[in-house]
Length: 238
Ligand SMILES: [Zn+2]
Image (cartoon, rainbow, N blue to C red; front, side, top):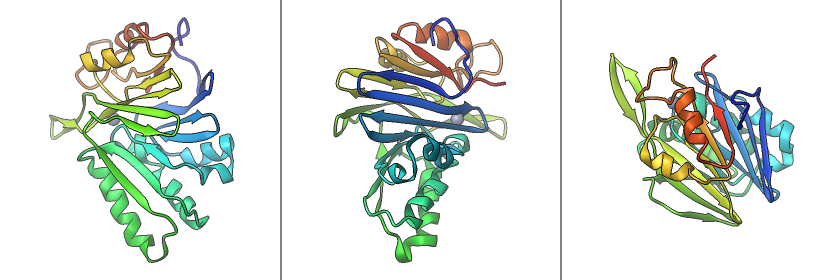
């Protein structure tokens, strides 16, 4: 947050009805975020450890009330906990549907979903709804409005940089706004969405101080964060 760029996890923020906790966001390991609007829990980037962290934070019963999971992109450190979270819901015989929102063509989500159905579809207790997003939608869920937007993130395959289907999300709860960019280089659209947000959660994943088209540097992310009312820097390499 302002004045103290790198705090230890978890990062916690509250304003009016909104509670937000970044359990962890370490490149190549895991990112997991909980947003609560009143008592209603939403999960953003279910990285490894999300089931354990939700159990500590909201308890077993409330995990079963999570209806909406938002995924910025399919890299393993952002989705590694999805299987265990869904399996827990299944073994506890959850009944309500689970919605997963993710960038169009994120192959990892389709693959996890397909494998999960292959294993559990004979007696799956709840429906899983996949919601592929282009990044132009407006989603309204109870008191939460969600504005996904395209960001710019890449991976290296055979020395070639390949664009990864990636989104940021802006959540607005009764006038309180939280903007999370996921993994991304600086883009004008990101800057537009971050500006004047009550909280911006921004990655600073570039491995050195040189500007990158895959991640932001700490300086880039902090400058951008300064256009929001408060900000967290996450996904900082150790
Ligand atoms: Zn990534």
